[in-house]
Image 1 (spheres, rainbow, N blue to C red):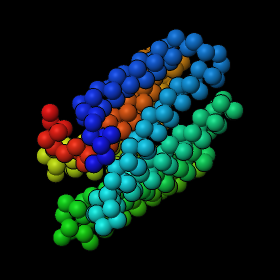
Image 2 (cartoon, rainbow, N blue to C red; image 1 turned 30 degrees about the vertical axis):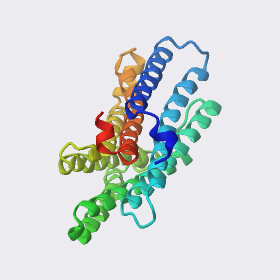
Image 3 (cartoon, rainbow, N blue to C red; image 1 turned 180 degrees about the horizontal axis):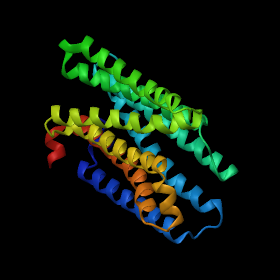
Length: 270
């Protein structure tokens, strides 16, 4: 272990992250409610806070990936988590730029392409994690992942085509809740398999993110989000800030794994 890393107590790292997260969430809520900046700048700053949280997840997942050697089986899990997180960070960045320049952004955009591709890497990470736990079921796990992915991709197309309201924008908007639901269910199953141990925490972060994104996507499609905006309801604050919280919690789950592999169980418990 790097001596500079070992000289820092893991509890100090966790506390520093808690404080940083609280500051970011408090700042987000303040800017959201008070709107101290003019025009699109206010929402752009809010978007940048979310992008910063996405960067945390990408950087920490990358640190976990590079901890493992090519022959280490968990490396495949973290390679896919890392690539998915970097794609999401890039998508958040693209969305920020588009919003700052256009004010309103309609799907699909390059940002949506990155978000959707990110789900593919998360599906691959889920596959490799299940194979690590149940190697004798490799073929069945692969078929299940392929099957669920096909359902998530095909269902919006079939439903929207049947209803004769198919557009690329509608497809993208209906894809996200299904993808979030699939990732969330897979994460819940990992939580059960790991029996509450530290190895479940990265996947708990995926569950929280899936729930948050599902809530937002459902509210938008159901018209609840727009109604809340028009009526000054606090639901929009909850929905939007939960997205920031989900990224921060995802990064926290990754960070606990980084602490585990760098300090071990004994040091982490002290």
